[in-house]
Structure formats: C-alpha cells, structure tokens
Length: 90
Image (cartoon, helix red, strand yellow):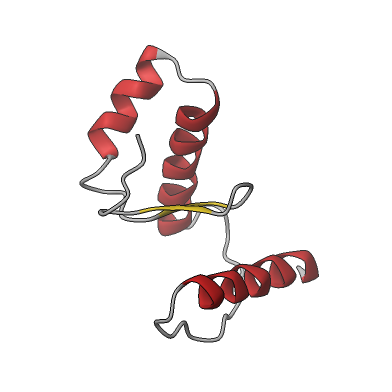
C-alpha cells in the first residue's frame, strides 16, 4: 500500500508541475476487486494496455467502441504522456 501511496503522490506532483490548475491532495483507499466500479475500471484499463502494447483486431475494435466517448483521460505513467479530448490517444 505504501508503494501505491508513493506512486499517487509522485503523479500528483508531476501533474501540479505541468498543469497550473489545482489538484487536490491525494487519498488512497482500497476496494474489493469485484466491486462493480473497480471491475469496470480494470476492464477498461486492460483494453487500453493491450491497445498500447500488442493490439489484436478484437482489441482494436473494442477500444474503438470505448474511445473517445467513454475514456476521457489516459495518463501513461511510463512516459508521463497525457491523452485527453485535446490530445487523443490514437
């Protein structure tokens, strides 16, 4: 859990450095992985990860249905790239 808190705090610091809008202080809570909102987020994250790394035709078709109408912001932690409506993930 400490690793997660550290990663979240680092991401908030990076966001505050690159974006002058205020970002609230982070809170880190855990939920059961079968909680509906967590399951949906996990599903979408898996689709985006596959789309970024090794896309199959099914992954591309599923991603196309979800993006951009459902996925508003993607933050790729490795490269610190942000994708949103103005900078869409392609």
